Length: 214
Image (cartoon, rainbow, N blue to C red; front, side, top):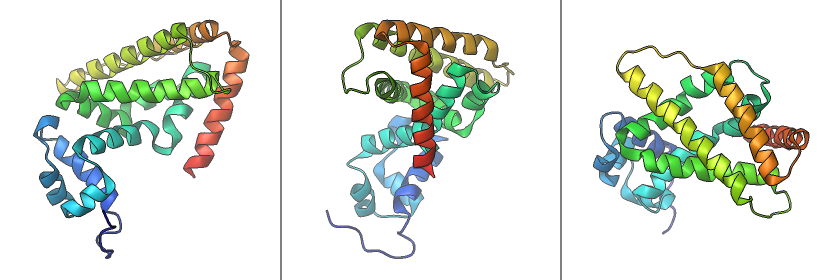
């Protein structure tokens, strides 16, 4: 399909479509969203939508991926969490806009999609860190990573439900930092990579992501 005709209102069509998606999701279930409703909210036509996205599922996964990787945030926060370099990192992960949107997605019927994308993203990051030669993660390492992602999403889902009920739930930062440290050691043992080497690789990846985001 050819590129839609350019005009001042259509320059940021893709971003407007994504923002329209999140806005509509505040009041509707994921299953209730339609391409027509999103286009109306974004003030664009279907041609613009299908230029940027193959279908609604493509938009959903793109929106989730953007929140996970915006500004290189996830690799940076992962590094800070597992190294203990930032005492407030878990609060920032849980309370920031990124997790507000991911929690909203889970509440509105997209738990399976968030989990699938989160695991795909995390496995990709760990594979980059642990397998610079292009090999695959060992099954034991993948098991730990998938278990950890499911646990984190469970924490987010619980906190989101508590917040919705007006119940203030303190963030167990010390516990989560200890869990992150344990996870780091277990993944390293499973993959056969020393912890110091893992931290060095994480630092390099984090720096690369920050530079790529600027």
